[in-house]
Figure 1 (cartoon, chains in turn red, purple):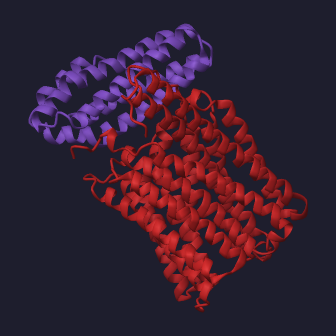
Figure 2 (cartoon, one colour; figure 1 turned 90 degrees about the vertical axis):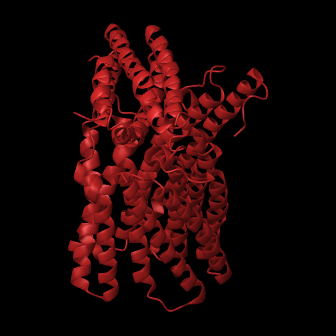
Amino acid sequence: MQGLLSFEQAPPISAPLRFFVTAPVFAILAGLLLLWSGPDLFASRWTPATLALTHLITAGFMLQAMLGAMLQLLPVMAGANMARPLLVASIVHAAITPGTLLLVAAFLTYRPLLFGLAVGFLGVGVTVFIAAAAHALHCVESPSPIIRGLKLALLGLGVTVSLGLLLATSLGWSLGLPLVQLANIHLSWGFVAWGCAMLAAVGAVAVPMFQLTPDYPGWFGRGFSFAALGFMCLWTFADLAGWAGLSTLLAVMVVLTAATFAVLTLNIQRQSRRPKLDVVQVYWRGAMLSTLAACALWLAARSIPALEDWSGWPFLFGVLLLFGGFMSVIVGMLYKISPFLVWLHLQNLGRGRVVAPNMKKVLAETDMEWQMFAHFTAFALLLLAVFWPAWFVYPAGLALVVANGWLLRNLLSAVGVYRAHLIKIESAAPGQSERR
Amino acid sequence: MNNISDFMAGDHRRCDDIFVDVEQAVASGEWERAVAGYAQFQSAVLQHFSAEETLLFPAFEQKTGMSMGPTQVMRGEHEQMRELMDAARAALVAKDADDYSGNAETLLIMMQQHNMKEENVLYPMCDQHLVDQVDALLPQLQHAIQK
């Protein structure tokens, strides 16, 4: 308990930042893939290019950013200190980065060897992370809602990745598994039990804290992650057992659970006491509205046969949830976490000798605003590309490259401020500061 | 309100409320109201720090023998917030809204993550270890943090 609140146990700045600057590179690759494959990508959700694109965003952008953020937030938000965080970050990052690239290459070429290598790298990276995070969370004495939420989200990640590895193995060696059914279970676990559960656990703390809103209701903190995971387990069981009616009912409950989070968040954000809507708040609200639209679309597709028969609806759903929902909220969180970390580490290193630049000097508001404009433009073009692929797929791909190139530039400029300031600190008192 | 957690967390919320008032005054260009509100904010936060550093932390350290543990980290963070508060005040006096907003944003996150550690970890530990002293300690804390 002695080191429970110790800053020294927080990870060095390079541990989370390596994940944050890698994430946009995968989204840039997703944009390039759109440009390379053109309108054909929208032919079916099962084309190699579509599967590759989806995993560039989920395993590339989302997983990188969310693991990096979790590494940083566990000690601060949950008092859970990971043992040897730099070592964990190095192994996980060095495993999931090539793992995702190999997976994407495997989808595009269908070579068994690439699937095998991707399974190995991603399996090792995610297992090491889950083991280290679970150990840190297990050592916390008083379990608060966020700890329970993060534990369940980790479980969700474990199931998602295990199913993914099973699918990749099956694709590589034709094991004869029901691929479509398993793929639907895999993506539902990824969206709800990992993505949404982690976002809800972090959001329940971060939204009131950053945006000065009322707290989420008590029942949300106590029940949300259990409800999400419980409905997911029951639905998976009913779906595998072939009980169609019950499976549909439970799937509706899963979607309504996710929609509840979006509605509650929008409602408390409406009551924010901060006078100005900043970039992060706009990103959060855009993300929640888009998630809500995705949930509404899913429910509509279940009740309107003509919509369900339209091959474009899964694309529309994917764009709303992945680009409008998860990507927006993740970029928003990166814009809070990264400049604060730069300030915090510089303040600790230069204390009393060199004043650290405040967050807005690390990353200017206008740079974030322009990037946000590019992001939502890319999102709008992607939505249009679902309806008119031939017209909009190239502008959408280009816009995705621009928006994420800009995000990368913004994050690297924050790293540049850190490095330049470190030199100032070292020259003010040579030998006294430690390079992290 | 008969435990340390509730009282001290309630005081965090009081400081947050004054912080919001100042931010709103700056946003609407009411500099005099902002400067006056900021003085009230800084004084409330400094009172809170002082009550912790002179009353609560020493009692906790004496009882648990942990003098280099969590309380030491909290003292370090108080120092960081004192510096940020001074920087934000200087920006406010100079009527520099951008510089104020940069320092205030940094201060807000620093303050909130600090509060979270205290409210989730340190205060519950104080409630647990100082259960036999709470009747004497709580009035002293209430007196030191004059509302």
